[in-house]
Length: 184
Ligand code: AMP
Image 1: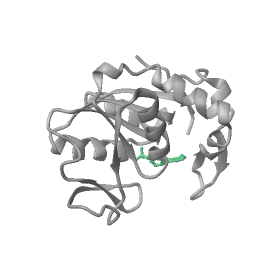
Image 2: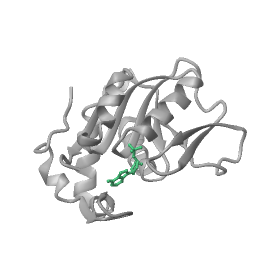
Image 3: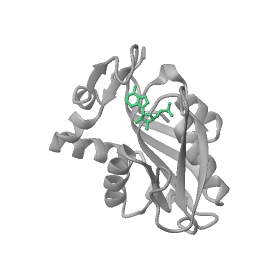
Image 4: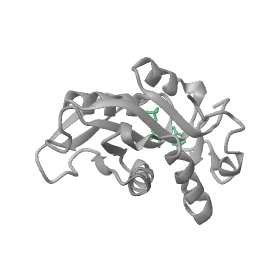
């Protein structure tokens, strides 16, 4: 199942601003802050994403800091599921476990509280956008390392040319996005 085609949800794709050459030349930054500014648009985005999820198939929703938190929190409310926060390093007050991962330039790290997820819990992973999939795959490794079952992921935006959604599917994740920007 995939709802991400270049014509799907064109009304919502039109609310996502593109900023060329940010943060560096050649990158088309897909800025979801303009979708967030639109009340009916954001509500429709969450409603349509929520409609792709069977609440009986998940126990918790995991959001990736920072824009992923916004989407995950709204989905958590819509689906009456708890939300697990995957944070950048050094932010969590309790005992945590983390994973380092490579970005195109440099590296980053995600952390979660030990005990936030119980072995066997089924997690829906959420972020604003999937590009290469490196961030999402690191999150999946981190969650699976704690015994979670991760089989679902949702995004507002997919950049299919960067291959992230395909990499997630190869890792056994049912991966959908609301909008799709091809050619990036
Ligand atoms: P990746 O790990 O390559 O899938 O990158 C995904 C993460 O980087 C997400 O948290 C996005 O917010 C951010 N990101 C990567 N590329 C873009 C882009 N072209 N526009 C906006 N955000 C991006």
